[in-house]
Image (cartoon, rainbow, N blue to C red; front, side):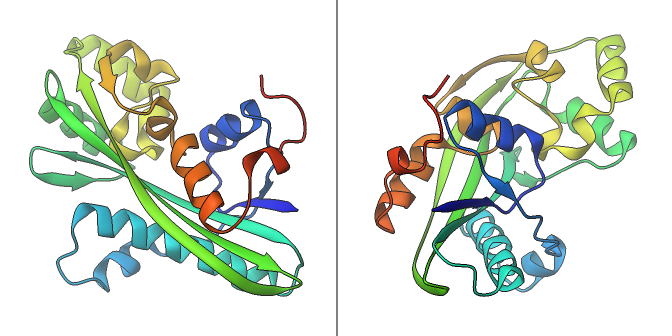
Length: 208
């Protein structure tokens, strides 16, 4: 069975490969702002789940009648200071983000949506969310400027990574490590089980 990751995130791909999968990567091209705008005052969990579902759906439509596969769409956002934030995109936004979250605690929400395809037909689907508490350190201005100059925080939810340079500025987490990186292994396993697929059937080699 083919496992399709509807994301261009190298971090998500790395998590899955380390866990024994060899996913096909198909980028959804979904307009996330348009999806968010179509929702009426969504709860944070509803927002990330809807974005993940839109990505999985777009990839399903793009692949047409390919047989026997599961598609997983993912989306992550940081809930902090009463606000849901995604990718900073610009250095200015990343700088403002870190000024507001340094020394504080936020919740990284990850939504996943899975579509199972058998004999070219959609047969089952499942979706869910995972929340992990992140405790931010208080980096110096010099450290923040160097981090922003690296480019790493600009294209990741919340403007930080746990498994890269940003890990130096995270005091700790309460919850699922893989979820903060971008794809929750426990949640993905539960959702795959809901659509009748076992993770061990998707292993291409022993997990490292």
